[in-house]
Length: 83
Image 1 (cartoon, helix red, strand yellow):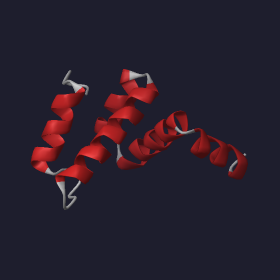
Image 2 (spheres, one colour):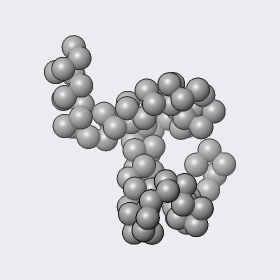
Image 3 (cartoon, rainbow, N blue to C red):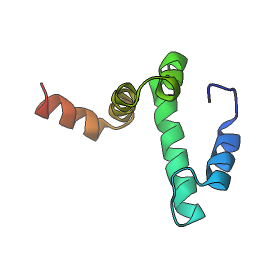
């Protein structure tokens, strides 16, 4: 995404190179689209590029934040369990 590729091009590359190591293309495509939705939910290009360039611990925290922004259930769970 930080290189300016379209969502379709990103999904195509993920499927071709099987980055997620899934057994079927259908599941790879579904997961890739879900991840792209989460990245779009961040609404911040610097956070998206940080996922790719920062240490794994930082990237995991950003991904959790993206999941919280996208899913009300996850957001409410995190705010209830970890006040």
